[in-house]
Image 1: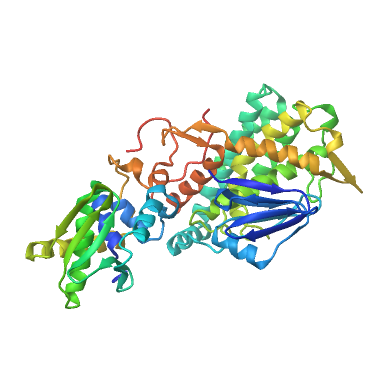
Image 2: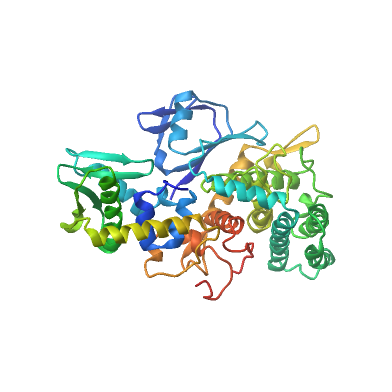
Length: 327
Length: 171
């Protein structure tokens, strides 16, 4: 099982012989067996050289960079090793044909709202007005005429969902609306950071498949991001990220001291990020029994399976049915 | 797709048509699969003194070649029929180039060697198989999912069986 490593301190990441070494500012060297690494997330100020990039490319280790505030900067995405012209062509076909694109866009929103409602149900607020509205709105997804309408419904669902989330978090974290780039309050900062981690996780799974991460269906392709990651992340955010954040603030693992306010821009400090990442990483390792594979699979692997299902759909094998957590 | 058939296409043909189709479209999952890594290591580690990896055309790659034999090294004889077909294909390709050899499959772990030759009957068989392989890979439609007893050991298992729904209606 390969794992992600997260570097917060400053220093140097280097290739030494045939493995990775992390050298901290005070000169302490630590070896990291490269075969066990899937992604490296760099939060600190880290020096790297081309030998390291070449090595990480060869070992198919992805490097994700985050700026001082913990916002995603970009990734070093090693040369594609699984390419299939046919999959790319078919993926594009499903984008170009309105009906086909709409079908997939709706799937993502349906799965997302299913998971939002699931989170609300599990936390016992299914009777609340905003949750009732989500239930009603999600019935309309089916009838949406185009992607824009689908997005519109999704937007409304999300507004009510965030209103509902307020019921589940301590008063000090209450927020009026979703703000991003930059987040304006602590809980928005948490959501942004959690979503970022979800995004890079999806990216690294897509990378292992033949899917092209720039061709997307719900989101418009190439909006400065690998937009297929945004599509798939919709499914997993309410399933993996939001419940985690709710738990963290309720158990007081995350408190106001984990945030910094920079002229109204609120972001998690290093301690806060470490707590969220540790919880997120642990969560992704958790397993559930897969009904079809008949074995335990991690949440992490569920992302990959979603990619497989998408490939099967676009090549005309098995119609896509989005994940709806059954456990 | 003409001329793009390699030894593996032939082998997959007798193992699973679906795997053949997917593989022919570069939708492959072998690289990370345990058994495949084991096979690669076996290939690299065995018969070091012999000439290895000879390309026939763009896609067929012969493991080992010596004076008399074309040789394939395999982990287990579970798929012997498929291995034989693969080897027959190499013999056939060689024959077309005016080279006549015999085939040998080495199951090193089992200390078992299987010899095979390209007689008239075999040649007919392999010609037929090649034609069918082309038919499958040129088809637009993915061959249907069929649950085979060895599906679980296949690198494509997760791909094929990544499905939603609770009951056993996958097959």
